[in-house]
Amino acid sequence: MKRNLIVLAAVLAAPIAFAAWPEKPVTLVVPFAAGGPTDKVARDLAEVLRKGLNNQTVIIENVGGAGGTLGAGKVAKASPDGYTLLLHHIGMATAPALYRTLPYKTLEDFEYVGMVNEVPMTLIGRSTLPANNFAELRKWIDANKGKINLANAGLGAASHLCGLLFQQSVAVDMTTVPYKGTAPAMTDLLGGQVDLMCDQTTNTTQQIESGKVKAYGVTTSKRLTTPALAKLPTLDEAGLKGFNVSIWHGIYAPKGTPKAVLDHINAALRSALKDADFIKRQEALGAVVITDERVGGAAHKKFVEAEIAKWGPAIKAAGQYAD
Ligand code: ASP
Image 1 (cartoon, helix red, strand yellow):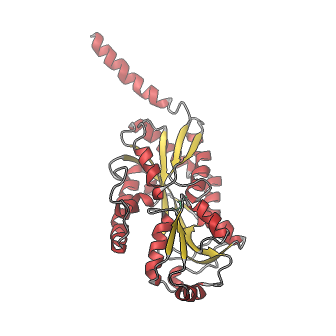
Image 2 (cartoon, helix red, strand yellow; image 1 turned 135 degrees about the vertical axis):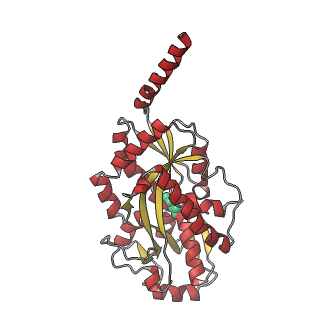
Image 3 (cartoon, rainbow, N blue to C red; image 1 turned 90 degrees about the vertical axis):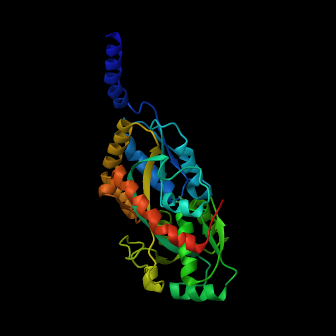
């Protein structure tokens, strides 16, 4: 009898404990450098996410390096209590094909919480490049084979994937220069130390608008509507037939995080994605907030599985691996 009462008390206490969650700040790991595209999404999101998390602060922790795989590995090993989350992008789906060994299992070590946004990319160059449009860039590339530097945020980054497809499309190999994120890469592009970069509009829109970098095209199949980017041709239109890359972000928790906690985070995410200011800020940077079923964990995971199947063969064909 006494034992039954103890069990009953434990069952009754469980939902109460989860209802109080979170009781302290929640850490959102960004697997890239501060000030870059993923970091910007995370910081904007953190502001609104906290409203659904008992108004607890959402602390951003930047764990850059190895194309996002270090930060993802850190979250995979974190305590599954919902206090450590990961905001990651397409690298979650491309890394399995790029790395012989990863510090986590993509589909087994995480709870998929839901997706956040989709972000187009732009091909940009240092302001001192002589080429002013894509046709001129193509001629410049052909005339400078063997001398061109292409910045990226490491193997597995969006800039790496886009750069890989770009080099394949123009059939010219470039020297890739990896950074811990495209924020430091952008600093070097602005300083003229590197020539080209393919980066998300969340990091490039303002630089394009102010003329600090040259923009040659957008990577999506349709032109963008953001005023600063609407004049840019798609790379497909500019001559790279079929070129189409779009980046997406999602939230992950360590495997084994209790369902009640995951539901709480997901509810906070769903209301954050309906926040008018958040939507406006994302749209101003060319990003589109997810509104379909992928804001839920099951559809998010299904989407990542489809992305792994989509990009894996192309990456393997390019023969790029890291140990
Ligand atoms: N998302 C990376 C960053 O925030 C850039 C990339 O993936 O290319 O720096």
